[in-house]
Amino acid sequence: MPPKRLPKVFVLRHGETEWSLTGQYTGITELELTPPGVSMVRELGEKAVGPGKLIDPGLISKVFISPRLRARHTFELLFSSSPVKPVLNVEERCHEWTYGEYEGFYAWQAAASRAAKGLPSGEEGWDLWTDGCEGGESPEDVTKRADEVVGLVKKVHRQWYEDPHRKEKDEGGDVLIISHGNFSRCLLARWPGLPLKDGKMFALDPGGVCIGQYDGKLNKRVLGALNVGMI
Image (tube, rainbow, N blue to C red; front, side):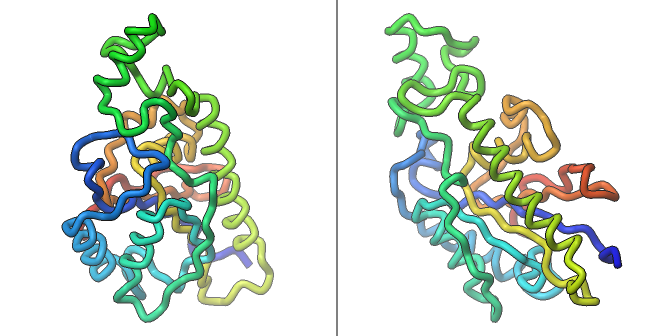
């Protein structure tokens, strides 16, 4: 029997850190959430997580989080007021864009470094989405990784949709991903099949939630909501 609803994927950026405040590129560096970041995610959990709320633990089949500690902390805070906490799966492929030599840089520093080496760059000296990172990931690398994560989500959704033992109430099916600013934007672009570079058109603040869903059938992936903050 077809389900009464179609599953969704929630993409959540981790809470605020010192470098997300300053605009420095943070890939592999382990940073704690700031006190306001902790409060922000905890409040989001109180308002948006629970039965009948935006993120209903009873409807979640899988949680994939980045291996970075700030993602794990965000998960714990998000469900701190919920009586039900889903099992998390640390998924290496959900890590942030690997910035290589530009780790900790501001955009202008990356541009200056490239200019000093005579490397090609965009209008503003460096464009992450087309130039990639020296010693880090290229747009092609990140496209491949984002597509693999999208594939994981699609597999969970398909298995739930086709499960003959699915409960009559259609519980489960949804997926939650807790990742980082730029990689989350990559997922938002690749979910409906847009070029990776279109990810820069999406705003996603620390603690922001975006929703990927379907338009009537599982082969029509669309974006349902962008950068939902305090509900």
